[in-house]
Length: 275
Length: 130
Ligand code: SF4
Ligand code: FES
Image 1 (spheres, chains in turn green, purple):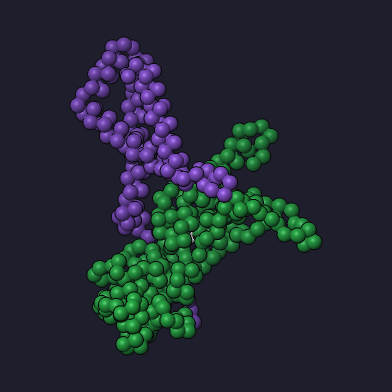
Image 2 (spheres, rainbow over the protein chains, first blue to last red):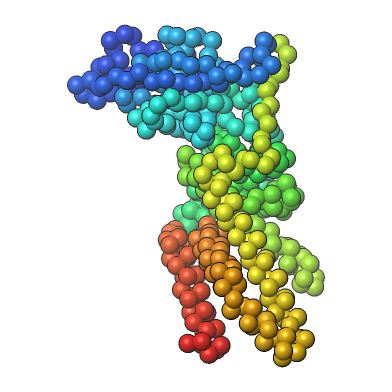
């Protein structure tokens, strides 16, 4: 989890004493003692989660993940959390920071005052400390068939499926998802109705539906155009506000509602109509 | 090792106090109560219209009472707020792609505001108000 090889920047887990000051801006940077209040849960001994406070000396330019790495290295090695890339790419370091779903590698300490409260992503079962169980999300991803289902399989000898830049732009934004699950933690509909397929999975369905090489929309609609699918969404819009990759899942879901409504009209109100 | 993930309850009635954006969402949804109340008022209006000129005059008079004017103002504010949230949403629900580019969202929402203004003027004109 946090055993990646040392890198020079951004700051490492547990920089050697004195070395930290030389990281970051030229001429060193200022230090600041930050108080973290971290939710802890040990499935082997605890029946409830509890908060634990840590006072951590941090560099001004650090992110919350750096502070957690410092806690793990210097103060409490039993603390558990996920991370990998430290650059908002892998999507594994999501947590609630002062109640807001955030990538901890993207949450700069300078933007926080006072005690920083860190909890595991909301709406997911807590596996241990800040680690949540993503099983439900993984299952929903699978259900929307997030892969190309070609209209017609063609032999390799016929060459690749070509696409124009305009056809690429049609879905590109929706292909930028890093599966961080922040949108699920932000979505009250998912909190209230856990069977909701949810923002990221439905957006991925939309991404493939919009792809000129794909012919699988009908199959995906069996999951997407249902009460557990797009119709559970009431357009709170929180998913799009918290998405670190600017995917804008809310827009994908509203577009899917429109196309699903058109399907319904064609099927039920136009004689002989097939969606 | 046994797996015992901890499930934390999602508060079914108080969740919207958790984040300001949830309160914003609820305020949008709650406007529909006022609009529903106004629909009930319109049904009463139709009823008194059907009941004859005297009933209709009485209904018009009630509309002019201070309480009724305050109510109608509140409904107007709610309706405008609700409509604005929808117009702002149109750019997400109906993006317009031209070649490789997308028409800026503000233009899509803006077009709806313009159409709204034009239609409102047309209706007010036909009704003889302006
Ligand atoms: S849509 Fe955005 S917030 Fe949701 S999982 Fe993908 S990247 Fe994360
Ligand atoms: S560590 Fe990869 S996204 Fe934060």
